[in-house]
Picture 1 (cartoon, rainbow, N blue to C red):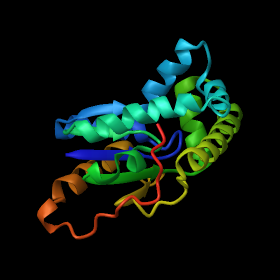
Picture 2 (cartoon, rainbow, N blue to C red):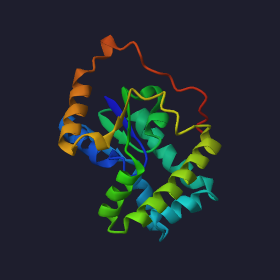
Picture 3 (spheres, rainbow, N blue to C red):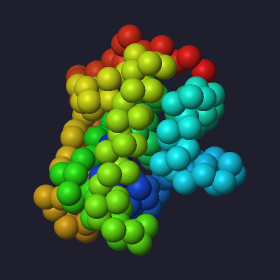
Length: 192
């Protein structure tokens, strides 16, 4: 089974994707971890690296090529990244979108990165604008189009344990033989 988890920064992607993978005995691959490693290798923060990526299209394409390759060649994976649902395309069994109000997301990011909430909010909004622009330019993907996802959740509505329980129950209830609703990914240019 290939499950994708996508959403903006601070939405609970990493925490819940890791928990879901553990609960189901699947591998967890995080695009955010790969991106942060790429940024650190260049001596930049993720925000700086994101803005640098606006001028260097090879950064996104390298990351996205890696994620697409994982999606098309591996099974038993929870693939997590902002574009995971789009990149996995027809290979994904289930595609989830996580979100939360920007105030909640900024608080989560501030807590994990030990920075002021105002700074986390400003950086998050800059990062989202930067990514939105690049995804549209590179792949013709409107990141705000949630029509490809099987379920979209506001993760701030449940406590972490209860939300993970709901996700596990959703996946366990899935039966591919009863699936009549897989949404195709159309109009995307995987320009790697």
